[in-house]
Length: 72
Image (cartoon, rainbow, N blue to C red; front, side, top):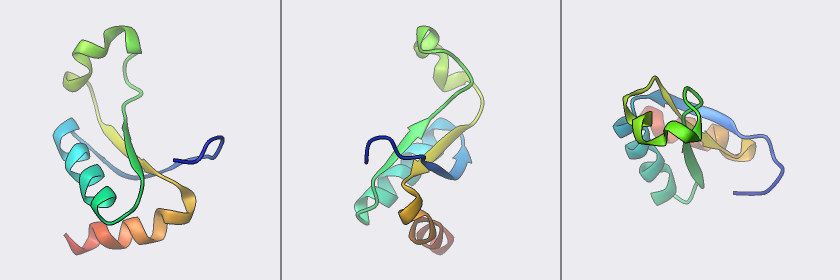
């Protein structure tokens, strides 16, 4: 992922779903990352039980990512 660039969220869901989406995007050449802002890194052991996870991509990849996700 490029440094100092605002990322955009293309998916929100549970941890497992977000990881599947990230893997799908990366298999098609779109760099992606999973993020959860619900809890601090201090509590990372409990993050899987907390709220929604977002899959983030670079803005220039947004349209292609959303298109790929609609095909699923």
